[in-house]
Length: 116
Image 1 (cartoon, rainbow, N blue to C red):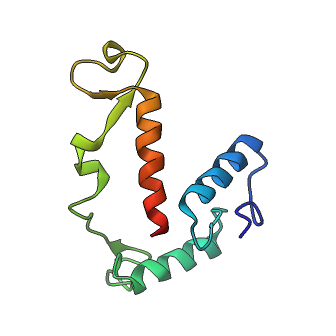
Image 2 (cartoon, helix red, strand yellow):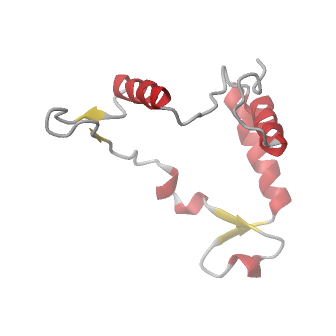
């Protein structure tokens, strides 16, 4: 799989980052969002089929769906959110802190678990 095959970006840095993440995670495919109406329809159908979105009464509220966030959504897991700077002082007293190199090592190890 070539993650840049259908790339819609002209930014070489974004392309390199996506290629590196694909190398780490080994996904079956990479989808480049183009923001088109066709893409919106396709992704909405997939979300409805997976019960991620529940269509509301389309006669009364066309194009509206109900979505509940998952209890394990990362936005609800503050203890797993870190500010990664060279010093803890830069992160502030109310934030979790880790040095960037340490966190990169940890995250790359976790990304490797995507392959199993």
